[in-house]
Image 1: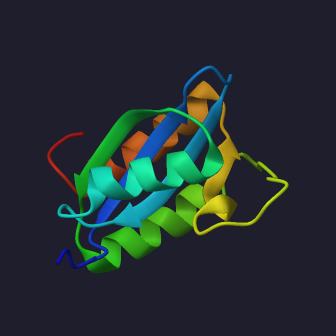
Image 2 (image 1 turned 180 degrees about the vertical axis):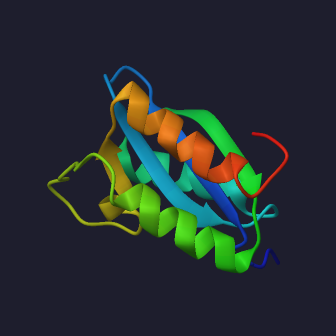
Length: 107
């Protein structure tokens, strides 16, 4: 049984799409499983940018701030995680990385 401690944040790119990313919160135990689960639902291939343990409170703040960036992508169907896909510029991707760098030693 894997418990979602919600203390990690992640960002991944959608393979084959320009500037389309998925942001979110998970746990170390569920991290890659969660990423692949959402990618399967969205019918896309993920390319991990980062998956980093930042602590429960930091994860909530960082995810909220990452979701304020970019332009939301609208799926024709709703599934768990569909609302966290964003079109992000290279500068916005760097902002996401910097948010994690401020609370950790590196990505």
